[in-house]
Length: 56
Length: 294
Figure 1 (spheres, chains in turn red, green):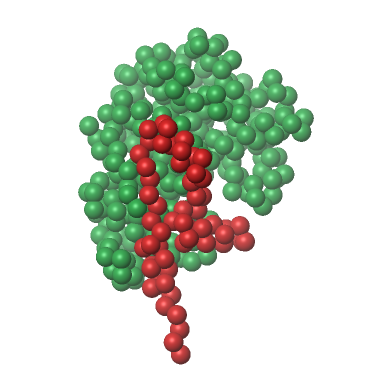
Figure 2: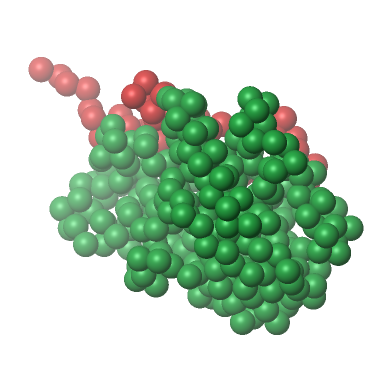
C-alpha cells in the first residue's frame, strides 16, 4: 500500500505519478517533441477543497 | 484529417520519448492529427486514487476530461491505463448525477465544469475503428510476410474492448497485425496480466509469470510478441534480459517484443533508424534482417 500511497502523493505534488526526469525532458526537446506541462496548482486546490480542514 | 486531443500520460513521456515521437509520425502518416492537452495531470493512474480516495479519482479524471472538452475534441490516449481511467470516469459521471454534482461542485473552485460532451479512445481503438485495418493495409509498403506474431493486449485494454467489440476473445490487435502482412499464432497465457505493477511488491513472482509466458511463446513458435502498452512492453522486454542473467532463458532464445506502432512504422516505410529498435533490451535486428529489413 505504501508504494501506491507514494504515487498519489507524487500526483498531488507534481501532477504526475511518474515525474518526467530532467534527462528525459532534454531528450524530448532534442527529439522535437512538444513540451508538456503538468498542472501542479489546480490539483492542490482540488485536494484541499474536497476535504476542507475541520474547524470544530 | 481526423483530430484528437492527445493525452500522453506519465509513463510514455517519462520513459519512452522516442516512441512518443514515432507515434506522432505514424499517426500523421495515417491522417490523424493530435493536439496535446496543456496543463493535464496524471489520469490518475490505476492503483492510485481509485483504491485510496475515490472522490479524488473522479475529480482529477474529470478535470482532465474538461481540458479536452474546452478543445472540443475527443481524447486519444496511447496508454491503456490512462484510457481505462478516463473512460471509467467519463462513464461514471455521464450516468451518476449525484457524483457529477459532487465533482462539479469542487471543480468550480478551479473554474472548471465536467459536461460529458467528449469521448475517450485508446490508440488501439482509434487505429481499428477510425483509421481501420483496411486503410492501414493500403499504406503498407513492405508487408511483414512470414512474421509469426503473438499478441498481448494488456489487462487495462479489456474494459474498452468490451465496449466496442463485445467479445470475450477480441480480434482487434490480431487484425491490425494481419493488415501488415503478419501471421498470428495463438498461445496459452495471452490474457495474463504482465504484472508490471507487481514489480515493486514481488519481483520474483512477476519474473515467474514472464518466464511462463516466454515458454508459451516458444511452444507456439512465435517470432515475436506484439503489445500496445508501453508498460507491458517494458515488462516483457526488460524481464527477459533479467531472466537471461539468472539463467532462466538462454540469450539466443529471447523473443523480441514490439509495440504495435513500431511494426506499423516499419511496414509503412518509416526508416528503421527512426523507430528506436536500438533501445530494445531484446534486440529485434536479427529477426528483422531475416525479413529483409536492414
